[in-house]
Amino acid sequence: MPALVRLYIRSAVLGTLLAAVFTALLIGFDVAGLRHLVTTVRGGWIAVGMMILANAVVFGGVQFAIALARIGEGSGPDQP
Image (tube, one colour):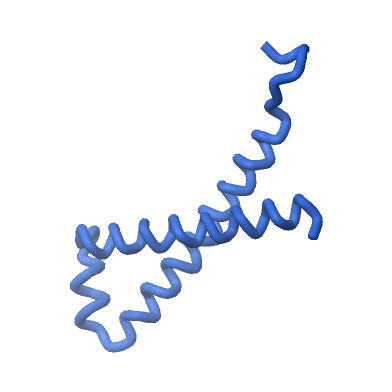
């Protein structure tokens, strides 16, 4: 498997984990009444899944962008 594909998969997995933690914190701290909404409305778990999915796309993309930006950083002779 090419190194760039491996890097993308690793970034996507890390982004999904961060998204799950972020969503759990949002629900745990009851930001904007999310805990009440998720636990009292029938099908509230769908909203949790959608929040995790949407945040996973954002966080995974950010992780991949940071990883790509760091590829250029090296400790070569012309690097300060």
